[in-house]
Figure (cartoon, one colour):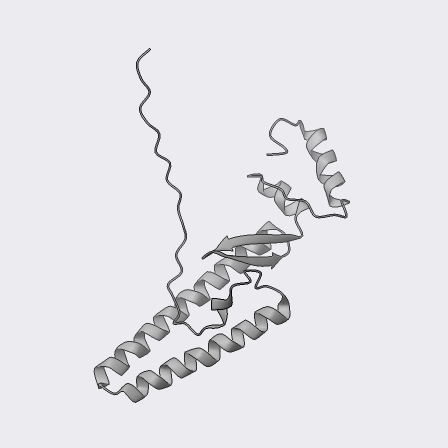
Length: 149
């Protein structure tokens, strides 16, 4: 939290200084304005993979929301097609659906490699997989009760 104990002048000076910084810098802050002013790229961990987003914090939020919406839409579409294939009782539709998903996954992998977004380096990423529902992780802390003094 670089701006927590700074007055306005010092925070403005730090923002201006970091905007001119030419090297990589890792910043942890809850100050959205500071993050918008300072960041040019954001690396986010999701599903044990690193995803790179270009731009400031606001553009990260909109890109993240868009990616999440698209993933959930793909999941719903896949589930609907899977139910239809199971209801019709034909395995040909299931094979066709799996093949379409495999082709789509290969296309996405190529696009990610082209853009340099896939930073996970996982060999399993090349394996076709069914779309999954987007799950945001949550962290829970449990603290023991303090003893009496």
